[in-house]
Length: 123
Image (cartoon, rainbow, N blue to C red; front, side):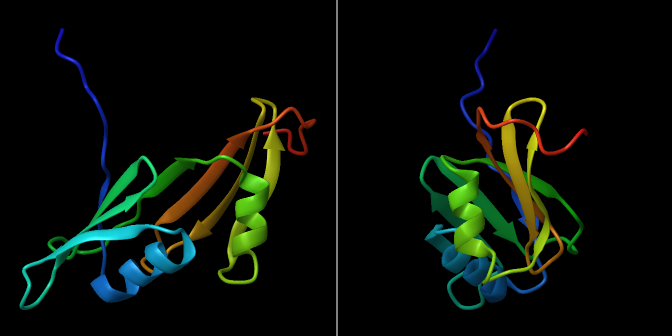
C-alpha cells in the first residue's frame, strides 16, 4: 500500500496578517511563504516538524488543531498571560496534559504532552 508521510492542515482565516501574527508571535511558527505577492491570501507556516497553511480562499469555519508538544505545562506558562485559555490545563486518564486556546478566527488550538502526573480530570 502507498505510504502517507505527513499532514499539513489548511485552515480558513478572515484576516491573513492577524492570523500569521498569532501563529508566529504566540506559537513560534516561521513564515515560509505568502502569496500572491501583491495581495496575499495564502501563507505557509513552519514550526519545528509541524506545518500549517492559512488561506483566505474559503469563509472561515471552525477547526480544532491538536499539537503534540514537548511540555504542555511550559507552553501554558508561556501563553497564559498573552491569550485567553479556553480550558485546562488538565491531566487526563490517557496520561496527557492538555489545554486549549482559540486563534483569532475561532479555531481551537489544543497543546498536549505526555505526563506521568495523576489525572486531574475524569473525562
